[in-house]
Image 1 (tube, rainbow, N blue to C red):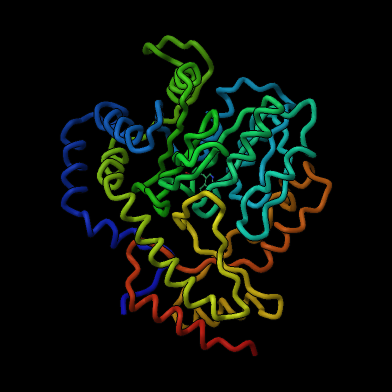
Image 2 (image 1 turned 60 degrees about the vertical axis):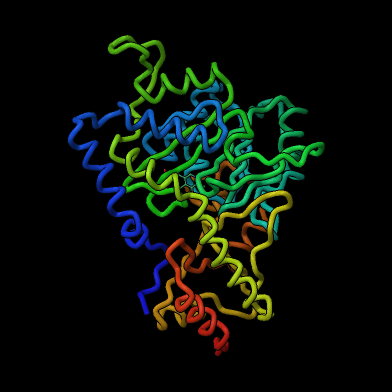
Length: 377
Ligand SMILES: Cc1ncc(COP(=O)(O)O)c(C=O)c1O
């Protein structure tokens, strides 16, 4: 049996080796390594795919969040509501800009920002909300939109883990819309292990607002529209042409990659629904799930370390996303003086299993039968 990995970026590359190699070679021979036609073409294809008016690529997902916040012209001390159960980037950019993160808890079933906790955390300094579409499914954007409208707040969607997932965003319509294109600004990451991953770092910013798009485009390229003419303070955050070339090929297969992840998740769901000490991931209402991660909860009588060691002995890797919520981390604990019990509980009992587009039935059967045989000692 092929070695089981949490992600298998090399096998995915091998499937499209010729196509990707040709694209890369064309860029190398063109001499246009920074921006240029390849990057423009990719931005255009992604905007068509997402039905997003504006797509601005950048160096990585963390920069995408940073630039998104910069473009809103917030003032030092302004507050931004963030989930505590997320990857650190969502929050570090808030702090880097002198803004204050206000942590809220997540839903115990979907692991997503709990929209019913937003209102009681709003103050006269609150300016924005960052919903994170964690593990590949969308937050309740209908409720979050209502809150944002009521209190005149910006929404920056962190769609780093959910590219390709769509959701219903309004009560009156069943129309579905891509994650990242609902709020004022959305972002994603093309980190290699992401559902749409490149061969290094990469990211993108989405907006439907012309003015914001112009500001964002300035910021990612040193604040300049014309070379050596700086309109605003910016930074160097550009997607490489080589990464854009890889992404252009892979974007054509993103739906297929996501379907393959869903196939793996459905298989796991079926087997684990018969195991009473495993809680399978719940689906958020009105949203697709593209399973960037397949994360289960273990019941309290199961020792997570023992379980993961047992799997590792059988050559099955696992990961803990995330072992400590951000409001308990040394760097961020001063921003929070309440306990956020759901996130704290999740950090203690969650565990993620291998999931990616290259998993085969033999590997899946092996993982499931090994887990079924587990007996807590
Ligand atoms: C939820 C979330 N936000 C932001 C990021 C940051 O993306 P990048 O690693 O491209 O900077 C990640 C990446 O892991 C993420 O998972």
